[in-house]
Image 1 (cartoon, rainbow, N blue to C red):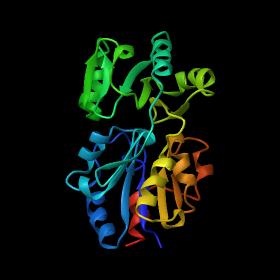
Image 2 (image 1 turned 90 degrees about the horizontal axis):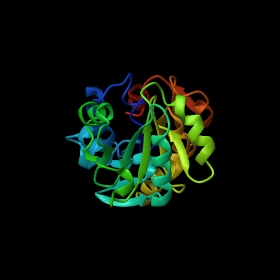
Image 3 (image 1 turned 135 degrees about the horizontal axis):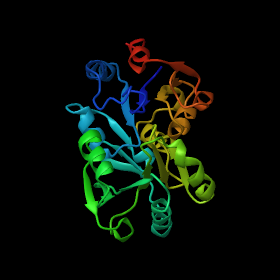
Image 4 (image 1 turned 90 degrees about the vertical axis):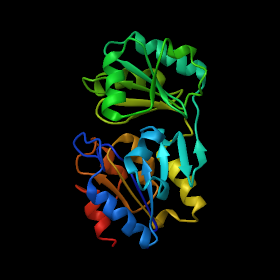
Length: 256
């Protein structure tokens, strides 16, 4: 019996670059709730941003935000991860030296983009709709660092290999969509966050169902035997899932 469903957003519930959930999602979530099935939104996105996406149902679900670096259940933080500031600053300085790499610094309250990066600031504020603030220098921020993300508008794969080779022994690095890859604490991932929420609800892994499409989803997909990779997933992600699908909503309807 399925008692919990966790889904990635971009590329999974949000297809083809969409920035709003389909009306069907808002019909399915109350139906799941009536059947005693809890829903978890699991994303590399900012917590406040995910809550806005799910309004007016934002208080009826749980959240694995920032790729597991901030996990919220019933308004309380149940799991989190922070990046060592010296390492975060090293990554920031390295990214400044690489072509076409734009930086995003995530804290629990908001994210930051350096002044002068007008394209990224516009994308984050007006397209993705994050709570974002301009900073003179990301290495001088006082805010806790949940995540450092690099955006390459020409494709994350153009830069990801370089940073993975340089830093993979010191920090977790995951792709998070077509133009993003994230640096997160070694103890943070969507699977760990989901496990914390499932534990709080006394739900076993075999009572969960998960959906994802990128390498930041693999721990969540591996958490349960009832996992689905999207048919458009990044190459190799399907190996971590038991099934593939073209539609999260279609699979959910089979439970109702």
